[in-house]
Amino acid sequence: MLGHEAHLAMNCDDEGRDSRSRTSPRYILIVSSLPRLSLRSLRFVRPRLPPAPHGTLARDWADQMLAIARRINSSQDLVISHYHVGTSCVLLSEVAAARQHFRQAIECYHEEDFRGVPENHWYAFDTFAMAATTEWMLGFPEQALRYMVAARTNTPRLNNPYILAVSYSAKAIRHADRRDCARALSTAQEAERLSRSWVPRNLGHKPKSMALGREPRWGRFSVRLTQ
Amino acid sequence: MGEIFGAVDSIRAGLADLAAQKSVYMRVIDLWRLAETQAIAAALDDAIVTVEQALKAEPHNPPALRLRGELRLLRDAGGAARFELAEKDFRKAIKIARTISAKSWELRATTCLARLLRDTNRRAEARAMLADIYNWFTEGFDTADLKDAKALLDELTT
Image 1 (tube, helix red, strand yellow):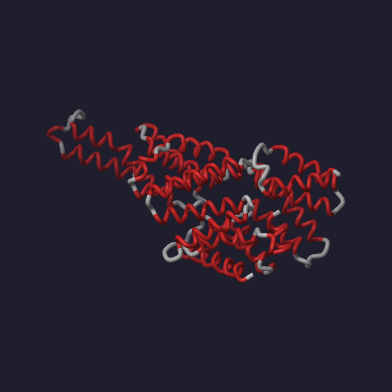
Image 2 (image 1 turned 90 degrees about the vertical axis):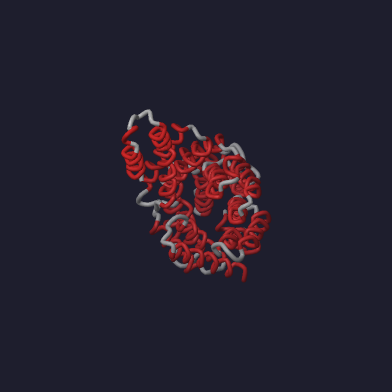
């Protein structure tokens, strides 16, 4: 992809041969947009990499995205790049490093950067959700809950029903991890209601099963498995 | 109980969706959640098969190791050897959780191991290791995991 973008610039240079000077406005426009074009290419490919055995490759590409985002100094691209480095770190079990990247992504987050761009809605939600996951894993359940609440409160303003349903599902899973059965169940039921007809079937069922399984009424199985 | 069976079916359907998309992302997590749900539905043999699948895909997954240890204890089969195997799973889960600083997973696995140690007359070791991880935490003392750990710690102290 990077090669393709470079080729694009070279063609342009050829096209404008009579004004081939590197000071020509078109040349400058194309060259200056290269980092952003490369970033978009990487963004397209990076999330589609399977986690194993390509975790290290995913991390390398995510690092490249971050370097480009830093160069063009765009808050939106910084959020997205930090998110991808963070998720790559999670895939490589580098949870503490992942936490730093999610925190930096949140520091750069401005809602207006994401609201009107449907392709970016996922980042507006999952940056906070992944931050919650890593905080929980690292032993900070209250901070995890704060991030999850932020993820849930951001999503209705995005006006994206899929992300809204996913956000309920993710929040229900977080409550279930805390073994807060009542909240987990009601949130899971909301996820189920929102996603009944058009998203993967287990979006509501999975957290619901986790919530139900943690209820004391299931006797010794529930008690042992969740302790 | 019907709800739990419904949940088992739903997670299984979700896994089939993931397999159809050739997606491995989340598969291991979904597998151990399926195993947990199967166990709650009293399908312990199915749960063991599922958790083994999860561990085949990711042999160093602490929650899956902890769950396999718990399932070994829940099953009546295996005699006294099941305690040894469960202990091995719990210790491995703890070791890996420590390597990646996953304190929540370490707490859960340590609580399981401490309970096993208590039941096999090794209370001092149980108390020491549980106190270590419990005292590391600075927040979340109203969560069920920390409440359980505290209750067990109190029991081991008296």
